[in-house]
Length: 159
Ligand code: THU
Image (tube, rainbow, N blue to C red; front, side, top):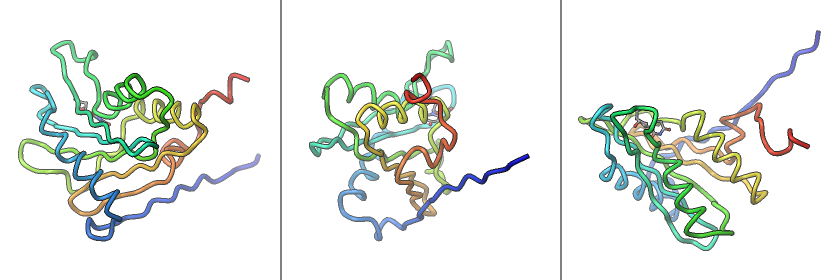
């Protein structure tokens, strides 16, 4: 038998430690939670992504009485960006979430489906996407979605 270890690197910053560009992106994710439609979960998620050309696209979760129709904030923003800005790689994505009461102290990481979609964009443009996960206790940053999806099924596996 052989075993192997998988490691992931996560850096935790306070807001004031972030560079101005990252900080703005996190603030835009926080603001995007305002447009969440989440009458069922009462959990508002906002995502803000920066494209290579500097433009920022935001999204929020949109729920549905038929729950499987719900779309996460991250995928909402990513698909919008892919359609409205074809050919533009995504450089970074910030994510924030709050309940009716407050933003989460510990950041919410993107769900499995969203990780898979982020991976596709990394593969498509052959460039990593930084994820900035906001919590009131700190912003957890990874340099690629591969840190959150260490054994991935991607385009490479189809060759
Ligand atoms: N949600 C997101 O928008 N992004 C995630 O990464 C995790 C979950 C949303 C979906 C649903 O509207 C609510 O959070 C509760 O699951």
